[in-house]
Image (tube, rainbow, N blue to C red; front, side, top):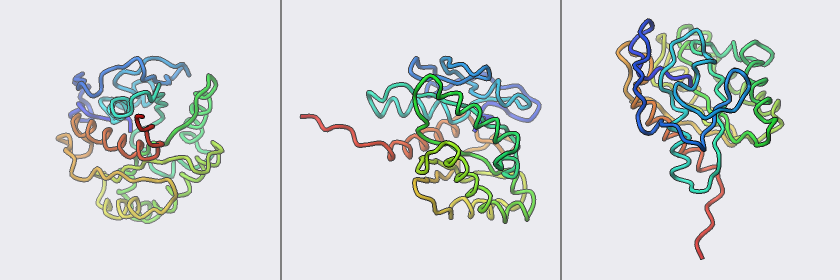
Length: 230
């Protein structure tokens, strides 16, 4: 979710190219590392995923697409929490990154508003080890339930991305797990086939835009139908 679009390799800086679908909008806010709402702009995770080079991710394209397709939606508040390269085991309830995420999400609600959905794109590092890959389905299923329980939102919409790539050779096992999870109000968007940066792991900028738009289409399906004109 942090996004490496425009980051050619692990040591290169972000190229700074922001496609129009990711432009700032006064109706798109970002919850920054200081727990403040500010107008969102790329890279969304620049002060969250601080040990990695951040580029374009799906978040801004997701938000802009919602505002374009659902007139009158209001304000989209994005709460970046992704930490690149993390294994699903690191997101177990009670562990550091999970606690950090929940602290941020709960703090984001202090000024009103509500959590409308969880956007989840993770799993590349779980393809390295056969045991991690085989336990992925169980672990991510528990993760989703723990998030819902801690937010007291048992039917919270979840939009999960099925992997386009992996760090290891067990990607098919992780993808099968992602595509096979049966959970109410969970939708899975498949990133397979979207273009990758030269290193072959992260999505390109345009692929991130496409993914954000696909995620927005899934999110919109959770919304009530617009009132018909009279």
